[in-house]
Image (cartoon, rainbow, N blue to C red; front, side, top):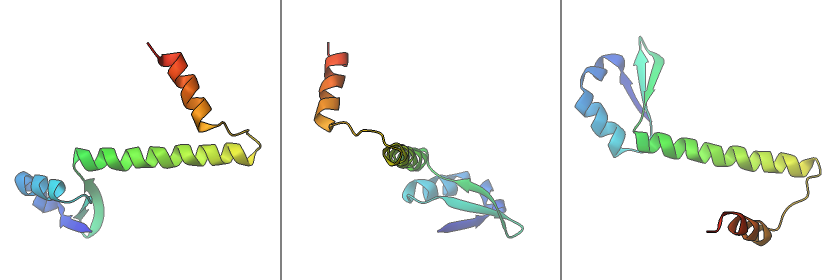
Length: 86
C-alpha cells in the first residue's frame, strides 16, 4: 500500500511515476487522515471493469436464485451471431 502526505502532491512527476510503476492506488493523507486516492487511468479502468464483471455475475446469481432458467452458452452465442452478423 502506498501512502503519501498531501504536501507531496507538489511533485507531479514523482506521483506520475509512482502511479504508473505500480498497479495499486496511492492514498493521500491530510493531517494524518485519508483525503484522496490517486491511480493511473489504466489501473482505474482495470479496477472498474473487474467490478462491473463481479456486479453482473452477482446479478445472474440473483436471477438464478429466484428461478430464472439458464441459457446454454452456445445457443446464446449463436443467437447473438445471427442477430449481429453482417
